[in-house]
View 1 (tube, rainbow, N blue to C red):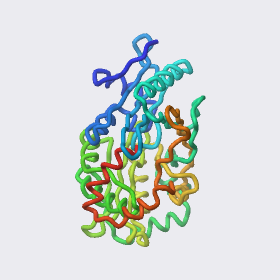
View 2 (view 1 turned 45 degrees about the vertical axis):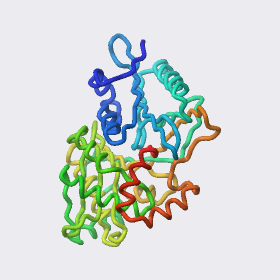
View 3 (view 1 turned 60 degrees about the vertical axis):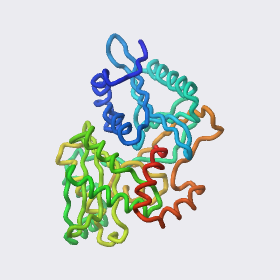
View 4 (view 1 turned 135 degrees about the vertical axis):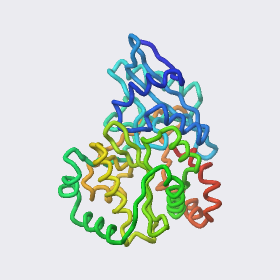
Length: 341
């Protein structure tokens, strides 16, 4: 067996190994291009080869930010993933090389985001869960068996309100506008336009931009990524002034229904913090809550970081951000979010 540091010449080998082991488009080589194009964030893709075939892979991204520190992480701007291996020996190869790289680069820490895997010798963070809806029985079974009665009524309310839904790359700009407004109102930075252009360029039909409109006005939107029978909800928002009219319920049902029709067997609703209202909302759709294991190798820190808006130390900054004009948050947001992988 030998270790390889993977470049563009091995893109096909990387994708051929990874794509049947994951439902996350963010594990593919194209995500490396998205992140570089949007934010110039370097990456280190490591593979183990045996007899000419890949038997393991680890995709790491290197963030260096004056506020949020210097670190390596898998699954940048995503929920989990980045680590795949055929046996324990391969895993040991990959982890040893990841630690060596972390020490060589002088990072504060290394983070490997998994579900169901706790790495020996790492500090484990169990703050987060993802929610996965089983759609194997088809869309009618999801509606009748998985959704709670109240959730079905909220979907019907959204339908009765007369909203329209459009899907496609031509909805990218409308999605960006509604997403950015919502995130400003939450007090959080949002991605740049260039990030979404890069997603369209490098991921093609694996990415779907979805927008709900009230007349001509975008009121809710989502970015959905599809791979290997899994539709993954990367970002979903609805403007708070429309909440009573339930466009968010209509949007979720449209994503689930169309993902099922397109042959997906799982709908991954994405990351939420344990005990949060967002996680409670996802349970109403019949989704199974799955613990995420964020494994930290603390190279130059005494305790694991907590880069999350719920961290009390960010409370004042969030309050200020909510009051800023959109033009300012559009300018500053990408400069902050590139450090919040």
